[in-house]
Length: 269
Length: 257
Image (cartoon, chains in turn purple, yellow):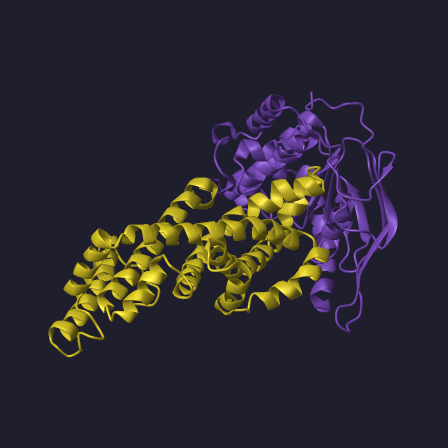
């Protein structure tokens, strides 16, 4: 079954990755990302926290294979990342469900590309829809869903494909606060059950702490890793931990780290 | 009236019909009132009577059928060639670089100017009529389809790539379905233009069709028949447009849910 976690080699290794965007019409080249290295362990949930424009999305896109590093290399297990592939599932900030497919067919998209038989892909898709609480919307079109539902479908679509690692690029950034909190709990609940390796990019400090077992803080552009903070709050996590002392202490620390960078970013513009 | 403010459904219908009434009234006033010579403009009743004569005594229905056949035949030929080419051009940049300059040039060539050449090449038979419509439509469809396909949201393609889609999957299961409703809209638009080409083709070197009837009527100064022919074209255009829209809605339910 595509749902079970096979013997995985999903250790993600990022080695001296940098990205320079070429100059546009006579300007100077943009250094989006300084050479950075990091490792994401098997079944770990790591959030990358940074001010806007720090290159965190660029980093994630390079892991996905949608962008090519200027220097360095990325390894997933023992394979080098050279192009996009189904071993790295991605959820985007913008809504990227295929508007011509129903919710269940959207979730089944990756399985279809893999050549899984129609019956099995329908079963797997239905199971994932159940996990994100959208069973009754299986035959709706994306247009008929709210933003939160669309992103839940996008998460189900990425996970139904059985990736080694799940990449999320500010997936809840466009949602209102209440919906965002619920989505965080849903995602964390799935992770607590499935223990997928997750790399999650955000600029929201609370979100970064609540979800992660490790928060990687990035500096303003050009992005560097500024801090790597472990979050030792036990699972399962309830939303009430957001008001606990441990959470508050971490939040105060990260707020300070990120504030310095935000000031730098604001001065640079 | 306020800018962009919406109006109620019944009011919209009443306003739409009232212009037709106004138009008819103006026409009747000019003709029945004797302000315009009957030689140059027939009155509405004469027009209807001429139309009836055409339908009952001059087998005008056959002409209508022939014209519809030519439009649809030429248009389908054009679509069969142009839609795949447009999709390839929109998808693959080298193909675009290869074809786009020529197609952009060719679409400004007036189809009607080809008629003398086409008569030389294909005679005055059906093939020549089909070719006029083909030339008039094919380059337009290619370019518009290419633009539509190349404008598919990049994020949809990226999402498909991260789900394991390869080139064929991107083309067949993302780019084509994503642009299908717009391609259908393009075809609907170009079919409207094909109607103008067919009449021009039938005005020259033709022995049947609505355009042929119109040019014959000119020789007889039968303005009532000419106007009836023009109105018939308008009505057929309206019906085909309506049918096309209905089919598009049925084919692409996700576009307007």
